[in-house]
Image 1 (cartoon, rainbow, N blue to C red):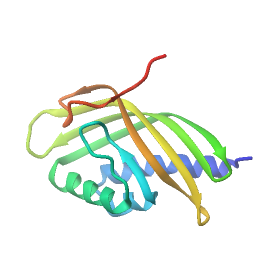
Image 2 (image 1 turned 45 degrees about the horizontal axis):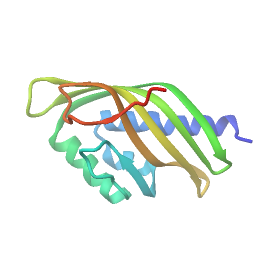
Image 3 (image 1 turned 90 degrees about the vertical axis):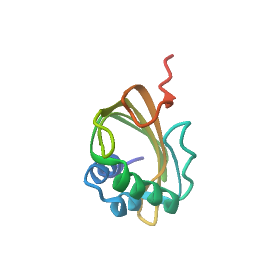
Image 4 (image 1 turned 180 degrees about the vertical axis):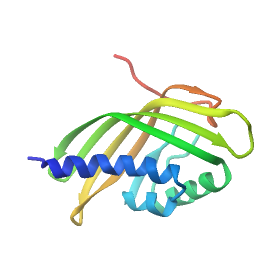
Length: 148
């Protein structure tokens, strides 16, 4: 049975991802992930399949694309699959000021995460981004949020 501490630790991973992204700390972002992480930001971006690939993308985007970002997380729902694995869905609103264009980019969507408990700590093993709506965003195609 999962502990309250596990739930808090896991939710904090996603909150830290947003904070470290917004404060331009790619070296801290990368420590939130497993070595074999799978990150899928949408159909226009090849999936990232390692911490090294993720770090390269974070560093490039934070240094060359974004002047400032603000990610807002809510509606965090977590389910445990086993004592060592869990998955979540959360809502994200993301505001992006770009370095080389005046328009502000907006994203309303969902994060889907998978988590793994390894060596005594929880880590993000998978991140997939879905969009409900985008405006002036740096990508035109995103994974759509399914409606049932």
